[in-house]
Length: 548
Ligand code: PEP
Ligand code: MG
Image (cartoon, rainbow, N blue to C red; front, top):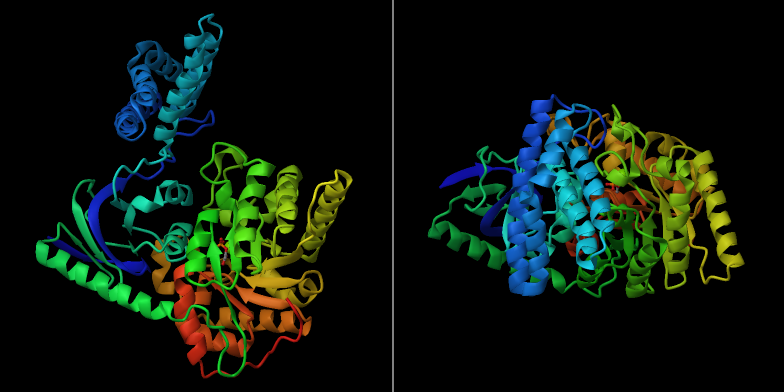
C-alpha cells in the first residue's frame, strides 16, 4: 500500500482500477521536420504495437457489444497491421530520411488506398477506407493522439492530460483522474470539474506504468492510496456516503432564487463544454449557461464541424435551457486547446499567439460558419454570443461587422434566425483598461479570471512549477475585477464572472460587494455557491440599473 498527497482539482472520493495514459509525443511531427532516422523508426515500431493493442481490444469489444460481422471489419484492419506490404513501405519511406514516421504512415495509407480504389472488385474497393483508417491509427499513436477506448470503469492516471485527451474518454466509465502534474486552471482540470469527476493533480504517484493496479482517491483529504487494502476501501465507501449526504442537503436549494440578504441578485449559471453537460446543469438548477466553451465541438474531431452539426448542438442547449439565458462563446482555440486540422503555426508563446478571436478574425469563413449556426440557434431560445480574448475596441467592431454580414446573408437566403445580444470576455489587461469604452460596444461582459490572472500576473496557467507564486486572490486581480464591474454598470450593462474564481467561496462576499450580476461555475459548484450567497453578510456597492 502506498499513500501519497496531491491537490484536489475536483472534490469527491473514488476507487477503482487504473488505466495509465501516455502523454502525446511532441517528438515526431506531421510536418516534414523529423528526428534522426533510427528514432523515427523506433517511434514507428512503437506506434505499430500500440495500434495493434488498440485494435485487439476494439475487435473484442465490438464482438461482445455489437456483433460478429462488425468485429470482422476490425479483424481485417488488424491483419493489415501485420501486412509487410504496408509496414515495410512505411519503413522504407522513413529510411529515405525526408519524412517523419507519423507522416510516412499517412502517405503510405493514401497510396495503398488509391490502389485498392482502382480495383474492379467492390469488396477490395471498400478496403481503401480500412487502409487509410489503419495507417492513420498508427500515425495518431506515434503522435500520442489516439482516442482511448475505455472498456470498463477506470481511474485515469497520467503525467498530464491535454484537453483533447480529456474529452475523448467515455465519461460514464471514468471513475477519477489522478495526474502527476497539472494545474488547477488547466483545461483538463476544468473539464474534470465540469464532469464532476473526483480528481487529484500534482501527485507523488510512482513514475511507472500503473495500469491494472487499484487506487483509492480522497480528493477532499487531498490524498491517494495505491494498492489499498480492504480497510481503506471501506473508509472510501463511508466517505462516499457522507459525500452523497452533503449532495442531498444541497439539492434542497433547488428552486430557490439566488438573492443575497442585502437584496443583490446573482444569476448562478453553469459553465459547460458540450450539450451533454446541460443535464448536469439542470440537475444542479443552473439559472442559465454563463459559458459554453464551443471550441470543444472542434477539439478531438478529424475536421471542422459543419454549420448544421454546430447548429444542432447549440439549438439543443438553447432549447433545453429555454427560457433561461445561454451564453455561447465563439471558438477559443489556441494555447493548450489544440486542433490539428487548423494547421496553426508552432509558436514560442502560444498563450500570447494566434488564438481565439485572432484566429476568427484571420480565418473569417470559419468564424462566419460558427456565427451562422449561432444566429440560427438563437431563434430557438435565449442565446447570447460572447467573443473571447478581446484586446481592443477595433476587434469588437470588426466582430460586429462580421455579425451584420452574417445576418444579411441569412436574411437574403430566407433562413430563420435571431440577432443575438453580443458580449465579450474580459480576460486581458488591455480589456480591463478599456472596459469603459468596450462597455459602450456590447450588451454584457463576462470576466475570464483564468486568463486574466495569467496575463495580469504573468503566471502561466499551465505551469505546475509556479504554485508558490500563484495567489488566486492577488490584489491586482481583485482591483481589476472591481474596475470591470464598475465600468459595466456605469454603462448599464450586465457583468458576470465565468472563470474558475467565480466558484471560490472565500470571494463570494466580495463579488456581491463589487456588484457582479452572474457567477458562472461548473455545474456541481452551483448549489454550494447559492448556499454562500444566501448566507452572505455583504452589502452590494455597485448595483445594476439596466436589464440583461
Ligand atoms: C477564462 O479564461 O477564465 C475562461 C473562462 O476561459 P478559458 O478557461 O476557457 O480560457
Ligand atoms: Mg480564457
